[in-house]
Length: 278
Image 1 (cartoon, rainbow, N blue to C red):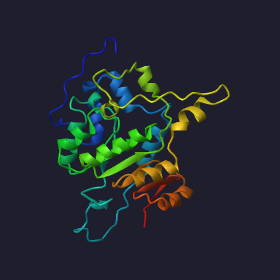
Image 2: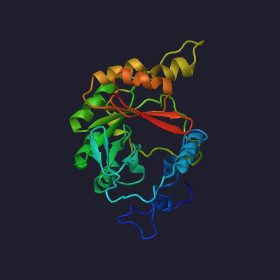
Image 3: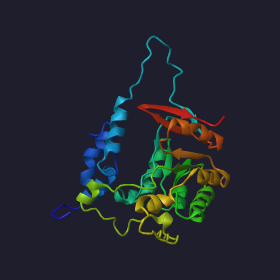
Image 4: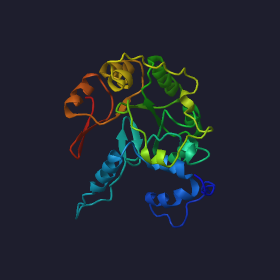
């Protein structure tokens, strides 16, 4: 932005004043451009979902149990065949080179150092193959559904070949409102930061609409995945398919019926239930 100073180089050590993950937000403006920070920190539209998510996490509390022997306690769990030290995964975040010159490769090393699992985004600024080869730790691949089935399948085949152990399919983002915060900050994606996983695929043809058709329903939403698409994907991959979405309770049974071998988050008010294929 006009008048703003150049960001400082990436940190190579943890600053002494950082005592929690949230403390990094204070350091971010020093190391990330204002536009990029607005893109990373902002949410879609009026950011109602972003605010609701933060409030939901604030309502989660730990129920302490008194006068019990906790010597054998552990945060370990088994998730889709993975034995994890703790129930924390690094979520798929696009264009991580906006925050660090090594982008997702640095994140992969951090995940390995903390013995956690990284989920690489379709919109990563490093190729899914480079991310997979950067460390030996298990990784999942987050899949954005593509307008052409052959492109969607090719992304999955590449993830299989690279050694990813599961696919996280994002189903609830066929249409996404842009970030007002990023637009107001004048953010433009730098030319050296790209969605490299999609770079070699042909640009999808624009949907032709008649005057009486809707640009939303017959246009953008015509490319949204349906149940039959999910069934097709599962039948064409050997990897477990985890769904990154919020769906209604009545849809949970259908998830099991189509053999979705995954955790299925169901939001009912502020409660989350987990369904799994028998």
